[in-house]
Length: 208
Image (cartoon, rainbow, N blue to C red; front, side):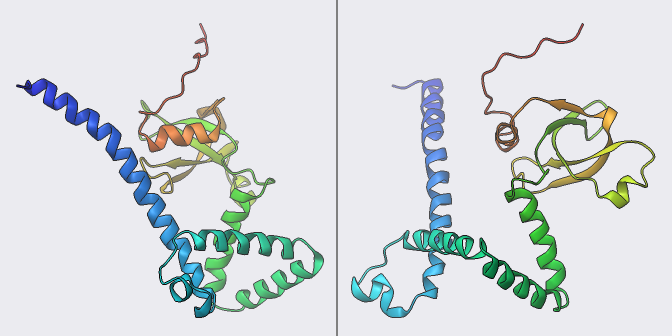
């Protein structure tokens, strides 16, 4: 007979094996299923359901990558840049749409371009109270706001756990933050895993 402690240990061990695997497969299935929607851009005769009799998952991923690659190749030249400016000019004339598009474009330009300054530094800031510290990422302070602040401030984004896409945006005095030598992706791992996933490293010596 198994002891209760042994059964509990086996269940926990089994969960540690299956939970990450199931969640990974679920995310991949969701991602592939979403990208497969790009197949709707093709004529019906091109779909595998019509000439193979069965849907082949993952073809939408390949099509999406090709579309993104082809778009980047076109917009890399002068003609493509003119087409982009023409398209953006049309969107700028549509109320509500122009506000949403410009906001999303500014965020994507900052995150995906190599010249952006967002999420380039990992900071420690006092949040949610003066006796607690939270991981944060330094972003940009708009010039019109920086000119009105009496002291030197930095803009920080504090992600929530375990979903780092949500969080809080603050302006904090530069002297009240601690800049730490940690890659952004490692900081994200700490946040998403709620501190469970930690890299093994030699901690810096504390100042005396």
